[in-house]
Length: 227
Length: 236
Image 1 (spheres, rainbow over the protein chains, first blue to last red):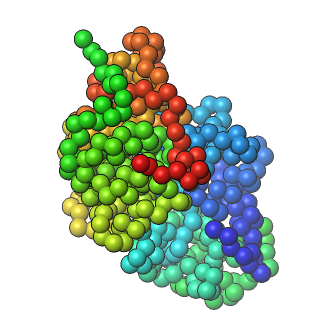
Image 2 (cartoon, each protein chain N blue to C red):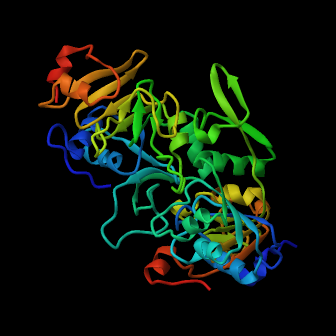
Image 3 (cartoon, each protein chain N blue to C red):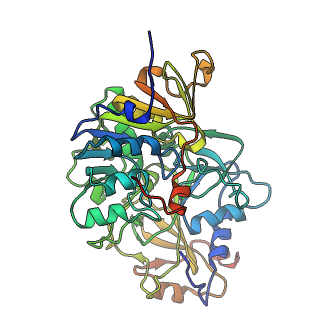
């Protein structure tokens, strides 16, 4: 998916870097296909994360050199990857026991829509002639301890992706904890969307105008200054 | 006398009947038992139900079996893949039915089927279209949907090495669905690059114990789907 960098706010890489700052040392993490995968490039020095890919590898390393790929060593996006020292391979039932059993600390996913109660839609636009395909997304959101979404704040048509309630088919109900967009970091709380921080050069009203549900102000004014 | 060695992929699949349910290992091309799938095309059984994570790419392997018109239904988590045109055409024209199952639910249904568990509750898909119409129950304040175990008449998977007792080891992420599908198949057929004597595989490293395997067949240099697709290959 190629998306034009927005004129205002964070680029895709800056969004990924911002997510990476919030991942604790020693976490077991599953990164979805697309922008979420970029997060691995920006993990701060001194932190060690272990990456899980649901097709059966814990300890996934970066992509190999061109032509060095092994067609039997791939990630969930079916791209060639590597296995780090200390990695393990396992079958699908074990892989999803890690997911559903709450053993993974964090999953970072893309989204079509996120609702103010944490509902996530990211697998289908519901169009009648589309070929439905879901993969492991529903299992991930049902089982992983924390679900972060990384997404553009609005669609290319300018429609809000953070909404009162999702119009696309759900991946999971009330599953998202936090959303990182080009414009802001926003928590899902029992009261709805709550601002955590604004992207540099973006103000509250600008974000609220592009959000399809009420946005509560940050609890911590000081966090507005962080980047 | 335990002798599970079949002389060829074709011989290993001689008795697949029309209307059979066949589990096919693989996640994308990793672990896809292409030579066994091609033997199934040659063998001629039709009206099959295929249980597999994907639906193949290009016009080889699983996509070729679909293209040949042998598949009435697929049970699958992600039928849409790069270079996959065969399944979308069959699906849109209504010639092949799709039962879409979340990947982890698919895995657990297969595991349960092989383990003698008829059904189980899972939190996956609650509140989504894939959970609709299914029996639900609350445990400790959380809702779960009832899912049923899956069994197959035949399972075809790819391993790296097996002994003649059917003990199997795999290669990296090509393992994926193979060990659980091996459990769920009434007849499980494994293609491997090398069949070795019993004792050659350290019992501590056996991934699929031989009791789950009925037939092993040697395919010394299995084809890779991506290479075949890149070369524009078709089957037959």
